[in-house]
Length: 141
Image (tube, rainbow, N blue to C red):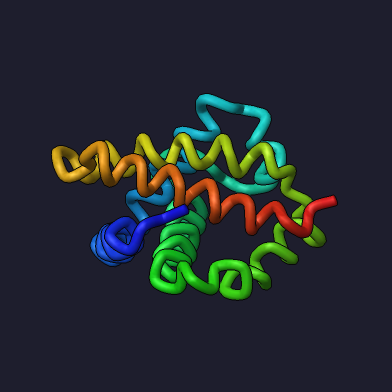
């Protein structure tokens, strides 16, 4: 699925995103909530407006999880098992939402990385985010 070079690139990109995790993550979440308003139903009791403290905090958690996943891509299923159970059994997030979020994260990465978001980086991120969301959706039934 992912070549050795792609795995190294992914780990490098997500490591670079950690210092701006709040910004990148909240940007992706806000894009999802704006373009797909039905995704807000899981967050209806929270302030998910632009720059809200909750949005920034949750965005940071997401980027940190993605960075951890990229660092441990060979053991992605076991690395994400607790998140998978949490999203499936407690939050009951429908797997379609992960796919919607993936697209928004790709756009956020393109905006934040600029010219460094090459076609190779885009393809690697697309594969990684698909694998990441597949693992998160694994327990949902």
